[in-house]
Image (tube, rainbow, N blue to C red):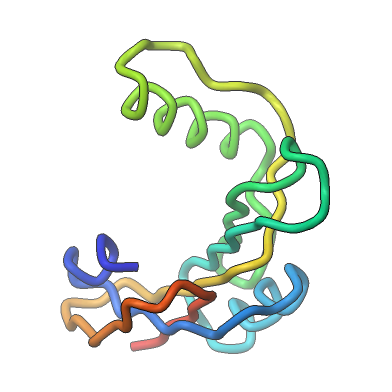
Length: 115
């Protein structure tokens, strides 16, 4: 959240919600992006980050794989270290690109934002 806000993106934390609620809120609030962070009872490969595009639509698996690959390269410094597999969720954020920055809390839970 802080990274998005520091880049001038309005971020709205929506709290702990099921993944479909984040997709729904992304569409209903007119957000450009929804983000869900997962840490549930599911197996580790089924937890992680899920992104929703405008309208609350899930990103294509190929695009999620590219995002994961970039993350893994930055995390490890080794190109091509992304692990294939699904991403799920349990903490959320939706954002709308803006030149304004909204204040954010340091608590970790889901988020949604509009301009």
